[in-house]
Each structure stands twice: as C-alpha cells, then as structure tokens.
Image 1 (cartoon, rainbow, N blue to C red):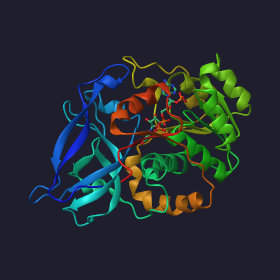
Image 2: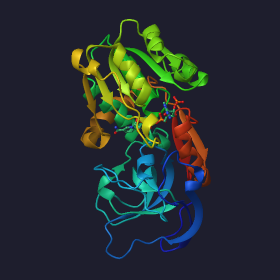
Image 3: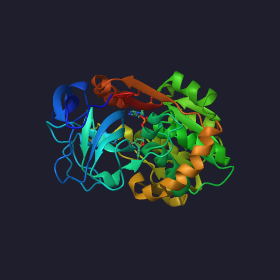
Image 4: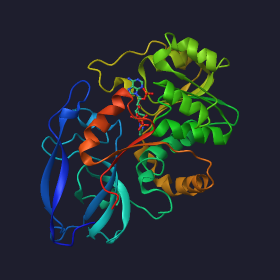
Length: 348
Ligand SMILES: NC(=O)c1ccc[n+]([C@@H]2O[C@H](COP(=O)([O-])OP(=O)(O)OC[C@H]3O[C@@H](n4cnc5c(N)ncnc54)[C@H](OP(=O)(O)O)[C@@H]3O)[C@@H](O)[C@H]2O)c1
C-alpha cells in the first residue's frame, strides 16, 4: 500500500557507488534504506510516484562509466540511486498530463518512491488488461526497439531471411516474432541450450544455435542460413558481426541496435570483414529508440491485438525485491537472464 499524502515512509534505494571499468559487479551498487516524505515540493511540476517494476537494460552499463562522448544518456551520479525505465503509480502530480492514481512507464529511480522531475518523458499507461510488468519490455522501451528496429530500419520484405543475435533476450525474442508474423525466415543465436530450445520450441524461430558451443561462427551461420542473410538485427557486435558480414546477401540490411559484447571491454574488438558492406551494397544503420517514440501509439495499435489474440509469446525473467536488483542487472552481461529481466519492487 502507498503511504498517505505527507506521511514519512521508508524508501529502500539502490545506490550507485562509483564509476565502473570492466565488467560491472553487484558491489558497484549498494542497497540502503532512507526515508521520504510523500509530498511534492512546493511549486513542483513533477510527479511523486510509487515504483512497481524496474527494467534491467544493457545501456545502463554505459551510464556506469564517466561519459566523455556525445550520447543521449548521462552517467549515474555516485552516491545517488541509479535510474532506469520502470512502471510506477502516481501518488501526487504537479503536471497536467497526470493525476493521482495514474500508472505510467518511463525513467524513474531504483527505489521504492521517486520524485520524477521530467514527467513529459513518461508515458501514461492506458491499457491495464495486460500484466503491468509488460511496460518494462514488450509494451515499453525494448518492445518499441524491436518494432522500430525491424520495421523502420530493416525495411523487411516477406520471405526474407533474418538473423538475430542475443535472440532470447528482451529485444531479440520480439524481433524474431515480429519477423515471423511478417512472413520472414528467422534464425537466432543465444548463449545456452535452454535458450536455443526456447527459441525453436516456444518462440517460433525457424532455427537457432548456441554461439558458445560453435567453434566457427561462420560455419554455424552457413549451416542455418545456407542462402545467406537479408537482414541482421545486431545486438552483440564483435566476432558475431564479423562472421555475419561474410553471410550477408547483396543489398542486405543491418540494424545496429546494440553491441553488448563490447560494453565491458577496455579496448573494443576491431571489425575485420567490413569490406563486405561495400561490395555487397549493404546498408548498416545504427538507431536509438528515443528517436522513434512518436510512433508509440501506432506500435500499441498493432501489438496490443497481437498479444490479446495470443500471437506473441513473451518471456520474462523476474526477481522479487530491490535488494535483488543489482545481481539481476549485472547478470545481463553473463547471460543469466532468460527473456526480459524485470525487478519487482511492489505488486501494490
Ligand atoms: N538502439 C536502441 O535504442 C536500443 C534499445 C534497447 C536495447 N538495445 C540493445 O539491444 C541489445 C539487447 O538488449 P536487451 O535489452 O534485449 O538485452 P537482453 O538480450 O535481454 O540481455 C542481454 C543478453 O545479451 C547477451 N550477452 C551478454 N554478453 C554477451 C556477449 N559478450 N556476447 C554475446 N551476447 C552477450 C546475453 O544473452 P546470451 O545468453 O545469448 O549470451 C544476455 O542475456 C543490447 O545490445 C542493447 O544495448 C538498443
């Protein structure tokens, strides 16, 4: 239950301890208890919210470093709670778009209660006949990423071959299903037998392989996609990108969504087969989901019916309690998560 307006409540928080280099560790964060008065500061146009579900996303690793390059995101502040996408209930609103009791998804704090100072970046949740946690994934940022990355960036045609890396994760599982529903031949890679089984037997992929058990990625791709790849949905970078370039078809497209294999390296691996982009006329395009948020209503219109008709299978990996958040977050970088990694703060 949320506290009464003006009441002072316990506020458990996940505090960012300091900038990280190399692989992030649970001990880079600390769970602390503080208190919070449930009242908006005088004159604030922000929102006082109770956090319900938090999303673990790979880009959060970028925010653990001291950023010195141009990007949309800023670094976490040492000594403050980490922030990220989440689902929350509004307890008090100083903004005309929201009122007490509304549900929203957007950037919030890793804590029980938060003051959101940029409510204009949050989306009001209007459809509550699906699990609320879906707004951290399928109906939130990762779902939008899969949707715009595939339909807007890849320019797919029915019957084309699609390859997806990190295919059993939040974004990958959805790209695969959007591509299948659209009429493509879909192959994915993932890092365990369990995930490969999930891709082939639950998520409807035509084929899949465990990249950790393949000594030759080029051979694995040629085995699963002997005629080559029209579309590569790039989530991992590094050696996989190099191998994929060899299998790309003429006029193929690569949506550069992310390169998780590089996020914790001090020195990024080089790409050796980039000449394929030239002589095959490949279009390789990076994208950030934030540039496409204006398409969110169109996305909901398409995906909500598909969920209700049971056309989309959605896999979540849920941990209970903020205190289990740090391990869940760093687990993304060892492939601990099967499906979308969610942290439950409160089921209300
Ligand atoms: N462009 C955008 O706007 C945007 C938005 C959202 C996400 N992204 C990117 O999309 C990608 C997927 O994100 P997500 O949220 O769906 O994460 P996720 O796939 O749910 O979780 C990350 C997965 O990456 C795999 N992985 C970790 N380290 C790896 C490595 N060294 N080599 C290969 N695979 C590795 C692991 O699966 P395995 O067991 O298969 O190794 C892990 O489960 C990330 O690169 C992320 O940065 C981009």
